[in-house]
Length: 69
Image (cartoon, rainbow, N blue to C red; front, side):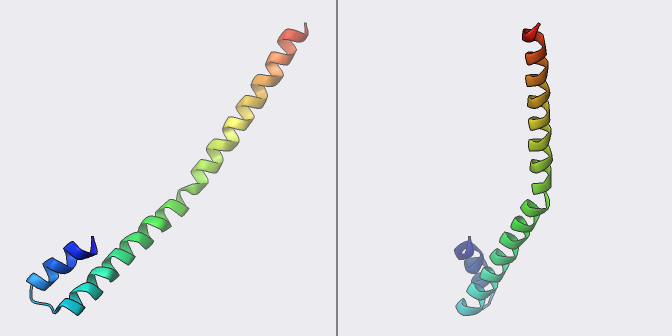
């Protein structure tokens, strides 16, 4: 990814060192944004896991009552 961006920046007139540095900064910013988005949406996974555990527990209680009769 960095190589492609640096080639385009070099073609646009920047030196090779500048192009690599800018492309590296862009890639770092993209990766940081993706990581931040994943961490912000992690709470949804925990809520879903909690709901699955509650539903499974309710199912076990209902099955126990059904077969205990």
